Image (cartoon, rainbow, N blue to C red; front, side):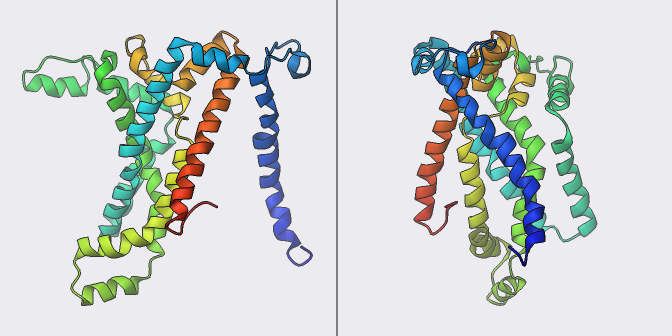
Length: 292
């Protein structure tokens, strides 16, 4: 520490950030075991222990909300997680640098748009007189109210999520691909390997540790889909398939003031995420990889 004291000073802001904004708020988890009353605070609110958990698991609508959350999270994991990997592999194959950088910039751009803006774009595109229905009209098809149809909502959520985040998600994979020794590709070419075989036997195996780490991080947040996207895309007609834990917590906690119940739900999400992360990390360690 005496030799590298400047480096330790540099990490102090990061340590303080995690202590103040990550560890201190953990103390608020005790609200899940109380009948929390805002004017009495944590120290004077009566303890009810597991009554809040009994309430949420006996509440019929909670299972519908949980099912919607699991379904959308599963679709995002199946279709959304591989998307940046595939795009990074495609970017890596582009040899014209000007074209490559231009396309990358276009794919990065949606990441910097808020879900309020993206939600507005989606509504405009899928409106009765929007672009999609206008194209359908050219072929004589009747317009569809996509945002009011339950059968389309989850697809819209997954596709819009991919469109917004796929470009930004390629950054880590492209960095990992760049770190691969070029001599491996040169040796593969000498052995007669084409581009597909180079991807299969060199790029993907060396990219696997990065893919596994990011997969484990995603699994840890499996039930945390994010409030912004769903809230800006949800309509009263799609509540039965789109109402997730975050939107339910917003209604019950912020609008109705059920702080203890919503904290119990949040704690339930965290426990499930930790269990999934622990299980998949144990499986990953069998292949010699893992977060710990």
